[in-house]
Image (cartoon, rainbow, N blue to C red):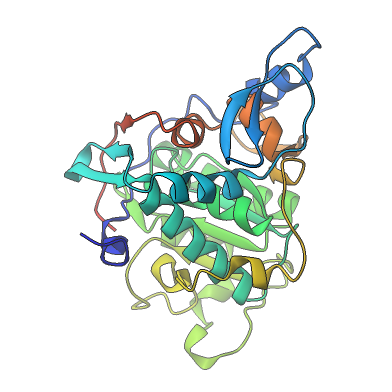
Length: 307
């Protein structure tokens, strides 16, 4: 199977409670308590691999490291999603992340713009999104979607607050899962989606969240939701990320992971620190992300529907 034909294998998974949901996050504490005696993970800027080093060095972004690793050995299996038995090589991950980064940048987004993910952490789309944001220099926030399984009204409140606090330019949500229609919840929070049609070629506008430009879902089509974009429509496999960055070069210090501080009810109350590419790696904030960079094969539990 070729890389280009593998796009249909990107999987979405049903929501589950996220023990890794960010409050002031454990990974931020790990980074904050690093001392001169520790041996943090570092990117080797030449080889594009992760290694340990006791001294400071210039680092590349995780997305750049992924590309270098792919060039070295593209056929290494790095991750398998047990439901539907979908397996990605490091080349698959790099291809999809590259295509999504190009899609974002060619749609007018720029380094420093913000993406809010409302995806379960075990979805393949979430892991591709992490690398795409690193490649494009975007900041990625995450909001736990499993709240909607128990309390849809509370999930509406949480999503609304997250969009407001993060000033997200992009929202990425699953279409449906665990008997929850996430598209309908998004429509209730952003009513303009009900009347907007991306097919008319006009920019999306909502006075409630003026920064939001692209509400995206993991489904296949526009039927019943012309005011949202299918994630597959954002994939643009031209491989020209660097040219679209217009001279900007994300590196290890480029912001990557935004953090939401959550109240006891799971509703965001404020914004936490934003972590760089390097800090995300040092703090092991995204386990699957790190294992892929280490070329350590991992199998991901969870159920969902193929995307």
